Amino acid sequence: MNNTVTGDELVRVHGLARIVYFPQYVGSDLEPGTATFLSTVGLPSDRVFLVRADVGVEEPDPVELGPLFALDGDELGCPPERRHWPVLGYLRTTLLAIDPESGEVHAYMEGDEDSVLLHHNVESLAFYLTEFRKLLDARCPGIDLEAEVHRFREAVMSFDPTPLENEESEWNIMLEEILDGMW
Image (spheres, rainbow, N blue to C red):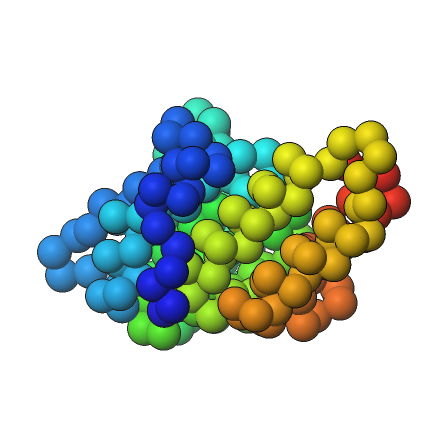
């Protein structure tokens, strides 16, 4: 990880009430750097990214990928080696899970049984969410929205180009929607 995203920055941009911290468990299979980041810096949760703990379901939301697939009656759709991957949360129609060994964040788009790599690590996800919040907050009458989106893309690409590499990714779709005035 780059170790440049700080908890203070997340709180400044998103507010303390919107930061979710993940507990560390003794004997966890989660890569140590990832576990430390999630428990000390956390992830912002808002209308763009909803952390699993904030989904508001009455039944406990599964914290692992396998049981979550089973809720939809698609237990066989989850590869056995990924059944115990922790679920981080949701981007509108995309489920985000983390590979506990590498720390990579994978996206399961609605209707797909296979994932795509969305972020190299959770710090990249936190950075992206923070820059995206800044982009949304910068929108106002008279602003050059294309220039702001360009600035955003440059910042993200210099940190981790992975989120924007796939033109069909949820992130690219949201950026197009912003440019089309849908946000």
